[in-house]
Image (cartoon, rainbow, N blue to C red; front, side):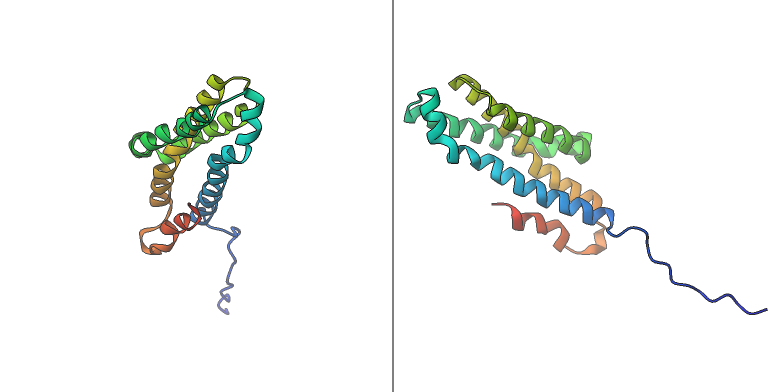
Amino acid sequence: MAAKPKVATMSAKAFSASTIVLFLICLMYGITYIDRNNVSTVASIFERDLHLTNMQIGLVYSAFAYPYLIFQIIGGWVSDRFGARIGLTVCGVIWASATLLTGTVSSLTAVLFFRVMLGFGEGATFPMSTRAMSDWTPQNNGRLPRGSPMLVRD
């Protein structure tokens, strides 16, 4: 009897799970960059529509920054406690909802509320994505996949 020849089989998967996670995190970084900076692009429009002063526009800008800063720290704890997948999903829903609902505002209070929510949602995503890359990238794969999302970040 002749021995069966070994046939090399191709993997059915085109991309590994860590490659997909890396791509999604880079995409998330790009979207959050656009998302957090879009208010400066439309500031002149909603300033006129809502009859805001320059000081009130400054409040709109800073309403995002403070919760963003706080949740950069808290986001790491949340991802350690509940996992990056759940944390990133919740944060994504928060900042997507805040962005969507910002377009429906009719008062300064509403703009401030949705900018604060955007800061909460986006601030926690960056430490959580670091946790996700740590969880999904094999240790022997080097540092490039873990540092790649930082190339996209502002």
